[in-house]
Length: 192
Image 1 (spheres, rainbow, N blue to C red):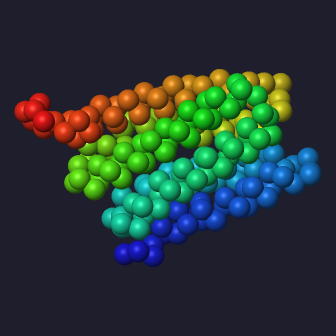
Image 2 (image 1 turned 120 degrees about the horizontal axis):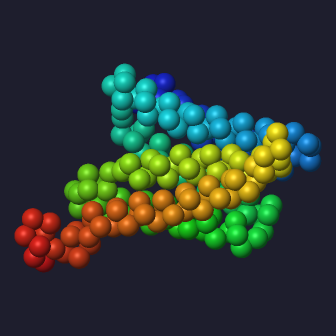
């Protein structure tokens, strides 16, 4: 079943990307909080579509393809806009690490799928922790200014560095799992 609620939520997440970009650049005081709300909605639909697909047995090849694409697009667009708005090395560095990791792991997963070993690079707990830290960090960075006296931007930047470290760690786990295939060695015998 291709057209189902989980896939509709994934498509909604993709449709929210241009909305997010337009709101980000609106010259109004409520633009950043509205962007944070749009990004939060996208993050919630990311969790919800996967949960519903598993719970209702509505997984599909289209959903399996679109879900990670939607996630990576939204995160990459948000990070690029944040770096453009605040062009400091302190923000650009973890953003580059996160986007670079996503490209690397996506390419690795595609290659592993081509050789029939996609299961070796399935989503890990480290990847899920990375995603959670990253989503919360981006929301805090979008809000930017102090909220109830809390330095939201500073907390967001600190959490983004934690997400970048988790990003690197999960990438190491993926590469380690696929290393026998990358080096042409059999995982069982250790021979190439």
